Length: 232
Image (tube, rainbow, N blue to C red):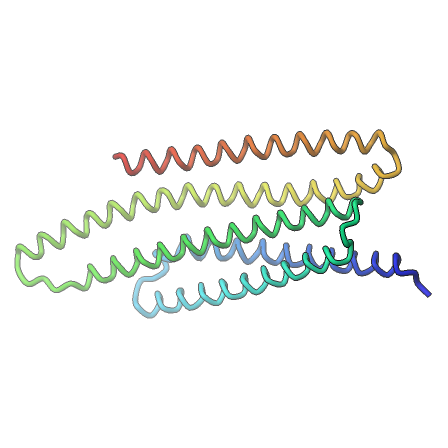
């Protein structure tokens, strides 16, 4: 008969595998959702195609929300299994929680981007359908459309910058996951060899410092880009 400790270990490993699987699925679906958000305006040439793209976007968003909820439930179950134990599993759980938070924030950012793109598409479509009652109205409509085109161009530039930031974010997330797997394996060794444990702590401090610096640089670039565009 297996001991409770062995049973908990098996449950923990099953939950950890499930968490990794869900994180991988979310990475793929968020990448697909991001492409859909970026091409929302270009893909909608008519009311029918725009409606189809919008329906597809809502379907993908619902799938991502479902996966995020499942991953949150798995993290909760992992927390219940270790029950506050101060071993390497607590660090693993913290890493999975950080990944969940990053994935959730990325989904919210993309969802906001899609909503803005949807509003712009509806606005431009509405302007194109305005009747031209006179030469004066035609001139005013042309000026309005040119202004909207300028605004759309500036917004597309910002979207490109955000897409680049998204690509960097996905790359960092993948590197973080790879590093976390290596760190978990080293953590097991570190529990047996105190010298290695000290080295791991130094690596964690260096990793946190690098993450803060890189996040600050990316945030500054985005802020300066937005300020430059709206001050033109």
